[in-house]
Image (cartoon, rainbow, N blue to C red; front, side, top):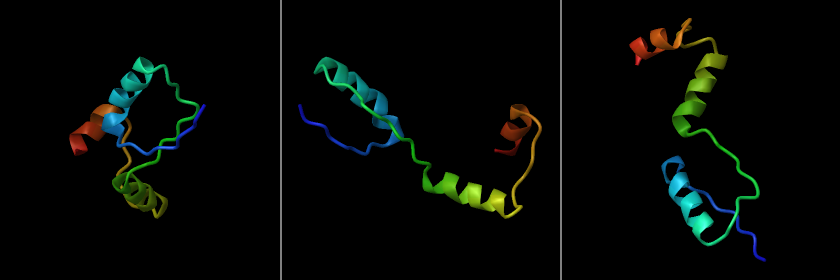
Length: 63
């Protein structure tokens, strides 16, 4: 048995999982890392910047 650690873009994960099932592989652990834009947004929010909204609909109006 061999264990690999790989890094994939989020949009490729479903294709990779499908491939693994075909070759009888399995995912032992999974870690999701925020992208650069998300990290920047989190930093801004910690510094008191950003917009506070009360609902998803309000948020989508800002986007």
